[in-house]
Image (cartoon, rainbow, N blue to C red; front, side, top):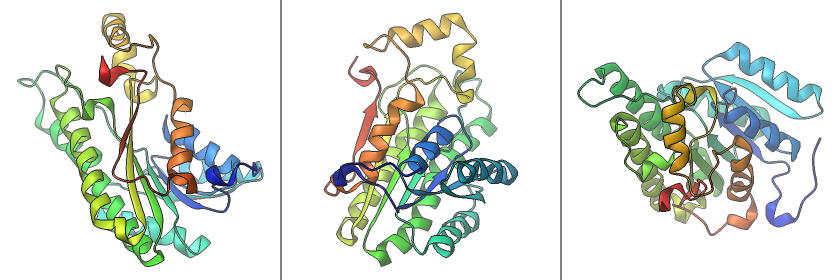
Length: 257
């Protein structure tokens, strides 16, 4: 299953935890990392699915581990990181693809939608990064990547909770990068444009909303999970060793339109 590449972009033998690893973004990411020779821990709230998905990678010749992870619980984040270390001796990377999407007019937005958005999309980002940051600092190396959104930069109507959570995650990325840079730990984020995953069914089920979202993307297409793969490989690999605190928008030009 390992695939040989230029050393600048090789992730062979890296131990990487993919949070949200059974989701619409996390699963394609986990498969590609495994295909390139990484040891991949698939972490998600549904432990049974993580075990099944990990086994499917093992059946194809990869090295994978399924882990239960509640992203909002510090103890769960710490336990997930420790399972990776116990299995493979270290944790080289974290890709946090977990998240929820709750939108609605500000005057009508339910408190629970605001609270869950902040809990999962922001607090969860911090807690998982913190759990991985300690071991990575002791190793003097590591790369943490969070999937944020173009909503961390642009302001869309009805996006108060989602945009606030994603903007917060982007800035936490910058702050952690400054704290941990001298220890060899890099912290970056990706900001995709609208991508057809189960999370975005509210957009794609409504032709009016869908067409309005598409009109804002200069490249005139929606993103795909595969559009993120090269950027993730780069941010995990040695070629990005001097890159930290960055929000890389993989968005077809959405943030400049």
